[in-house]
Length: 179
Ligand SMILES: [Zn+2]
Image (tube, rainbow, N blue to C red; front, side, top):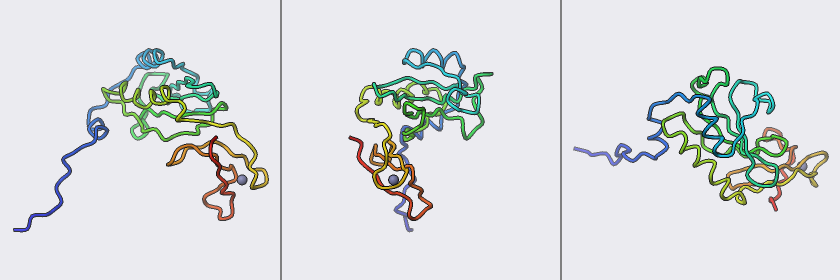
């Protein structure tokens, strides 16, 4: 009898095991308390141009004016989680103007361990802020009117041109290193 070489996957990554756990309700008071202790401040969703009524939190992590922003998935009106599919807690880094330049962080699901999982995203940024360097926008030297902005790619931070458009063949592809 032929025995296949492909074994079922027995090993699960931590993240996958956590997703299998049950979702929990998170009250706005819990989120306020936990993130308040971590140095975050709740800001009005409208103040950051966030159209839905989801609680948004921010704190700075270096002296650049950039902030860690957390979209909590908790509705400020009734503490309810948002609809399935968009109900994970998201962490991004925003520049001094509020533009999210680093969206590389894994989502945090609303499960029992949400606090620890969130700390795993936040603490490396706070403790090793120099690994997340951001530089102010500057004129692109390669094209007319383009602005080089700090972005985050697969290999980390780089300056990319605002005239770059992946669907336009001759758009500006100039990139520069963050100094
Ligand atoms: Zn350019």
